[in-house]
Image 1: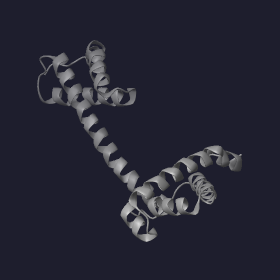
Image 2: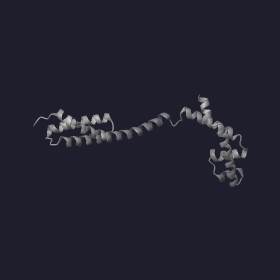
Image 3: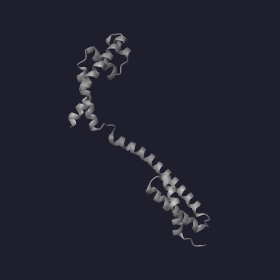
Image 4: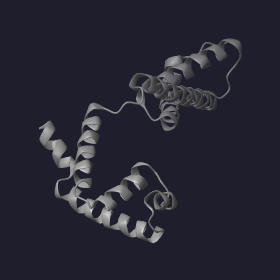
Length: 179
């Protein structure tokens, strides 16, 4: 077999191999690995057979190696995402972050304070509907009032609560506590 000047082949076909790898992989590190693997594979092929068209072989090898790297990248990332999600759930235990917990506490306190400023029937209907998840019908039976009246009381309660909560929004309270 005839000897091959690999440096000349790399100089001549290297840029095409690099472009092929980079176009598919999109980053220097993976493209460099692919570039190297392409020439190592070509060297192994050359040991066993004669190569008639180096450019075609090298472009083919670069494409195959790049696709293999992409498959590995996406397989690894999909497994890592699933694994990380499970690990984060185990670590966090579904508990809110301390800032969120504080903000929720502040909102709950402000809501309690605002509910206390509503008429008793408005506050009761609001709590049964939105905190206890009662249906209009069930609220009507419990309080012995008509369904239409429940709708009116809920509307009044929401309007008043919106005004009361906007006067001192929980975000402002949160900022004052944290800062």
